[in-house]
Length: 135
Length: 135
Length: 135
Length: 135
Image (tube, rainbow over all chains, first blue to last red; front, side, top):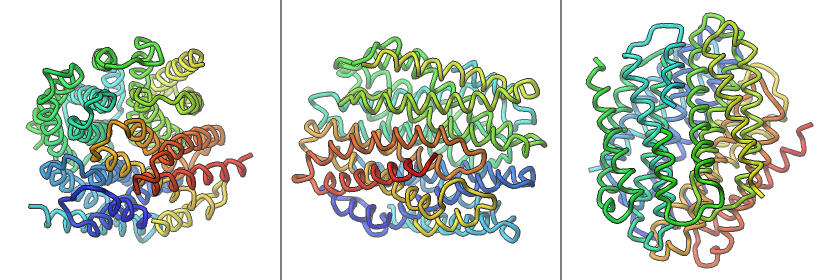
C-alpha cells in the first residue's frame, strides 16, 4: 500500500502544496485505520457480548467512513483548497480520538480492540502532524 | 427518500439527542447534495472544455464523499458523541461552501453547475443550522 | 432527492445509453435503500438483543455500501461500460435480496427491520428491472 | 497496511469461511487498487489534455468505489453469505478489467496510468483467484 500511494504521488505531474512523503505516510495511516475499524466493528459484532460493545461498533463505523473520506480528499491535489483539507483533518483527528478512546476501554479483553485503538491513536497523531504543516 | 429517512428515525427505539424532524431534513439534504455533486463531476467530465472545469470536478468529488460520510454519521444515534458530530458538520459546511463557490462560477454556462451550486448552498445552511442546536 | 437526481440527469449535456427517467428512479431507490440500511444497522445495534441481530447488522452494512457504490456508478455516464453496470447491478440485486431476507426475519418484532426489508425488496426489483433493459 | 489487515483477521474470534492469509492479501490488493485509482483520476484531471482522459477518470472513479466496497464486504465475516461475496467479487473483477484496459491505453504517456493499470490487473487477478476458492 505504502508503495502505491508514494508512487502515485511521485507520478502526479503538477506541484503539490504539501510534502509528498509526509502526505503518503498520512494517507497510508488513514487507510490502515479505516481497515482496522471496519474489521473491529465486525469482530465486536461476532462477540456474544456485543451488547456491551455497541458503542464500540458505532465508533468504528464512523471512524472507518471518516478516515476513508479523508484519505480520498488528501489524495486529490488538483484545485487544492486548504480550508477543506484543514477542517477535514480536524474532524478526522476528533473521530480517531473518540474511537481510540472507546476501543482502549476494551483493549485488555479484546485483541481486535487493542490493535484498533493503536491504529486510531497513530492516525489521530498523523492528522494533527499534517495539520501543523498547513498554513 | 425523505420518507424513508424520517420513517427510520421514528422507528429508532431509543432516545436521540437531536430533533428527529430536523435531523431527517439534514440527512436528506446531505444525500441530495452528494447526489448532485457526483452527477456534476460527471457532467463536467463530459464537457469538451473539461480542462476549465478541473477544479470543479475535484470540489464535486470531495463534496460527494464528505456529504455521504456526514449523512452516515448523522444516521447513527447509538453511542452518540457530540464532538464527532460537531467537527464533521463543520468540515461538511466548509466543503459545501468551497464546492458551492466553485460551481457558482460556472452556473451561467452550465445548468448542472447551477443546480449543484444550489444544492451545496442549501446543504451548507442545513449543516450550520444543525450545528447551532448542538450544545 | 428525486428531483435533484432527475434534474441533474436532464442537465447532462451528452447522450445517455439508458432511459433517463428509469435511471433516476433506480438511483433514488438505491440511495433510499442505502439510507434505510445504515439506519437499520444502528437501530439493531441499539437493541438489548443485538446479539440476535448480528447477522442483520452485517447485511445492512454490506447493503448500504453496495447500494451507495451502485448509485454512484449509475450516476456516471461519461465513458459508459455496459459490462461494469451490468455486473454491479447483479451484485447489488444479490446483496439486496440477502439483506431483505434477513430483515424480513425480524420484521414482525422490529419496525426498522420491516421498513428496511421493504426498501431492500424494492431496490432488488429496481436493479433487476434496469438490468433487463441493458443489452 | 498488510500487517493491520492480517493482524485484525488473526484477532477475529470466530471461524472464517475463507483462508485468512489469502483473504488479507486480497483485501490489501483491493485497498491499494482503490488508492491508485483515486490518485490516477486526480492526476488525469490535472493534465492539460484531460479531455482525452475523461473516460479514464470515470473508470478510475468507478473502480475506486467498487474496490473500497469489496474490501469492506470481505473484511466482514459475521453472518457470511457466499452469494454476496461471489457476486461482488465478479463485479469487482469486471470493473478492474475495464479500468485496467482504459489505463493501459495511456500507460506509455502517463506514468500514473501505467502504475494504475498494474494495480488494476493485479486486483482483477486477486478477485478471480479468491472467487475460485468459494464453493
